[in-house]
Amino acid sequence: MAERRGPTSIHGRLLSYLLAPVALLLVAGVAVDHHVIVNPIHNAFDHSLSRAALAIVARIHPGPDGQPQVGLPEHPSPPLRAMAGEHFFYRVSLPDGTTLAGTPELPLAPDDQSADGFNFVNINFRGEAFRLASYRTSETGDPLVVTVAETPLRRDRAVHRLDVAFLINDTVQMTAVLLIALVGIRIAVRPLQRLSRQIIGRPPEALTPLSTEQVPTEVLPVVESLNTLLDRVRDSVLSQQHFLANAAHQLRTPLTGLKAQLEVLGRDTAGTPLQERIALLHGGVDRLAHTANQLLTLARAEPSAHRDSHFTPLDLQHLVGEVIDSSLDRALAHGIDLGADSRPVQVNGVYWLLHELLNNLIDNAIRHTPAGGNITIRCGAEDGHAFLEVDDSGSGIPPSERERVRERFYRGGGNANDGCGLGLAIVDEVARVHRAQLSIHDGSTGRGARMRIDFSDPA
Image 1 (cartoon, rainbow, N blue to C red):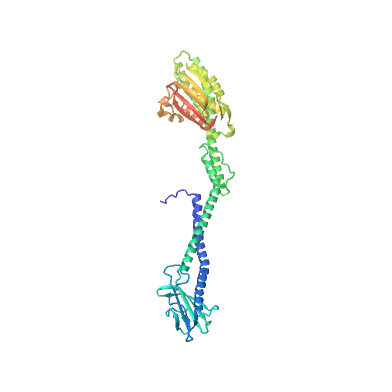
Image 2: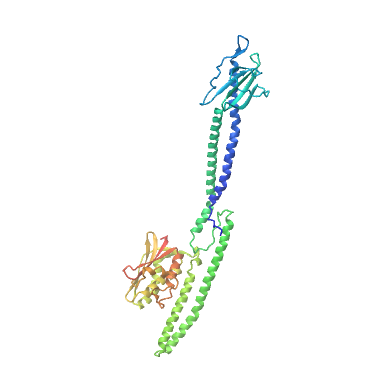
C-alpha cells in the first residue's frame, strides 16, 4: 500500500529548489576565486624568491685566486621568515655543477632559456616540499648558477587565508541572497494567504463565490473551479429548499380544507359519541398543519438562502412589542403572565426571520409553562453586543438535553404530542444566519428555562 504523502508547503518547496543552486554557486564561486588568486600569490612569492637570489648575486666577488667567493654562511636564515619550521637553502655553482658555496646536494632547476634568467620548479628535498629557483648569470665575469629554495609554508598559508576569506564572503553573500529571496517569496505568496484567510473565515453555510480580485494568475483557475463547485452546491441546496417549501405549501391547502370539514362535522355530531374522536382528529390535523408551517419556515431559514443585501437595521425592542401583542391572547388562554423587560437596541438582520425566532421561543415557552406561570422577554445590550432572552417558569430543560433539543424533530421527555420538534431547530438556524449564538440556561427564578440569543455584531 502506497504511503500517503503529507501536505507540502510552498515556502518549503521554493526553499528546497533554491538551496541546491545556491550551494552549487557557492562552491563554484569559491573554486573560481581560488583559481584567480593562486597564480598572483605564487608569482608574488616567486618574485620574493628571485630577489633573494639577486641578493646572493650581490654578495659574490672575485677572491685572491680569481675564483668567485660568496660572503654568506652555509645555512642562512630565510628572508622575511614568518613561520616556525620554514627552511631556506641556497647554492652557488658553476655551469658544470661544481659547487662554490651553499648546499652541494641542492638540485638545479632545468634551464628553459627564460628571458630574465630565472627558472622555477617545485621539488621534494630532504623529505619536504620546496619551491626552487635557479638564476643563471655572468655578471661577475664568470658564468654562475645561483639556486635558492624555500618551503612553501608562507604561500600556502596566504592561499588558505584568502580561501577562507572568500568562502566566508561568498557564504555571507549567498545567505543574504537566500534571505532576500525568502522575503520575496513571503511577499509573493501573500495573495495566497489572503485567499486562505478568506476561505477559513467564511461560515460553513456561506456558498457565495469567492472574490477573484488580487488572486494570482497561477491560482485563478483553482479559485474559479472552487466557485463553480460552490455554485453547484448552492443550486443543490436551493433545490432542496424549494422542494421542501413547495411540499409544505402543498400540504397547507388540503389541511385547511380538512380542518374546515372537521369543524363542520364537529358541529353536526355535537353531543354524539363521535364528538371525542373528531376532537382528537382535529388536534392531529392541527399538529400536521403546524409541522407543515414549521417545515416551510425551516426551509426558508437556511443560512445559504440569504445574502448580505437581505439584512437591514432592526430595533429589537419594537420587534419584542409586536410579537408580544400577537402572542398575548394565547398566553392568557393558558393562564400565563406574558411580559417584557426590554431596552432599545439595534441589530442588523432579516425582520421576518427574527420574528419567527422570537415567536418560536414564546410558543415553546407557552407549551412548557403551566397555568399561573410567567414568561418574560428581554432585550438590550451587554458588553457592547445585543442580546435577546425568553425567560419562563416552566418545566425547564435538563443540562443533558440542552444540546439535543436543537436537533430537528427531537422532543424532550419523549412526549410525542408536544409540538413537532422543530421550534428550537428553527431558532438555532436563524441565530446562525445572524452570526448569533443560542444558549440555554436555567430560569432566572430557579425554575424553567432561559433561552438567550447573543449577537456577535456590535450593538
